[in-house]
Image (cartoon, rainbow, N blue to C red; front, side):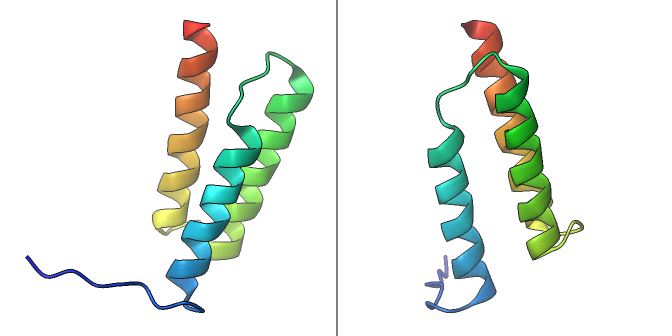
Length: 74
């Protein structure tokens, strides 16, 4: 199977770096409106930066879904 290293400076490299930083920022789920408003705003900004029709939208949605699941599991 062929693999490819994402070169620094490419859109994909930057996207994954931004996603990692967003995960770090919101990793600990808080049961507050402020937390969820900030998370949703960050995800929308991320999606618009990299294209709402792209893989970025799927990553953003996955983060929100994961955080919702973590909140429900307590």
